[in-house]
Amino acid sequence: MNKIIIASDHGGLELKNVIKDYLMQNGYSVSDIGTDSSESCDYPIYAKKLCQRIISNEFDKGILFCGTGLGMQICANKFKGIRAVCVSDTFSAKMSRQHNNSNVLTLGGRVIGTGTAKEIVDIWLNSEFLGGRHQKRIDMIEQL
Ligand code: RB5
Image (cartoon, rainbow, N blue to C red; front, top):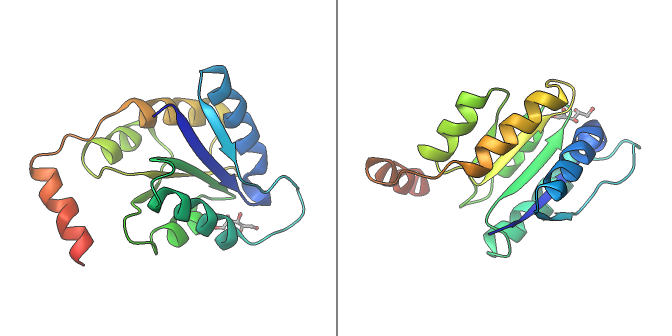
């Protein structure tokens, strides 16, 4: 699927805009569901909106941005079927796809630079879930 959904609070807005442009330059159709303002807002609202549209199968992957990536990760993992990972290095980005079949990436606009963020996004989007023994573990997560 060459389309992706993204959202942020005010703390992740700047990085979201950089990554949005980057994704569009790379041929992705990007649905940005806010915020579009630098005024303080509540990240759980945006995490919920994005996760609902993944659970409904409208999108298979999404990226959430906040100051640290942490609040967004905590919120997203409240939703059954969402496997959200807050990542700040490329190895974890790859493993989170290959082993954990992550479907939501969360990034901290106050933590990582734009160059690192672009590399993380590239690797995350282009790494495939390996299945096999990892699928069994994903099934176990769903039962928790
Ligand atoms: C907002 O100040 C900040 O708390 C938020 O962007 C995020 O970092 C929360 O985890």
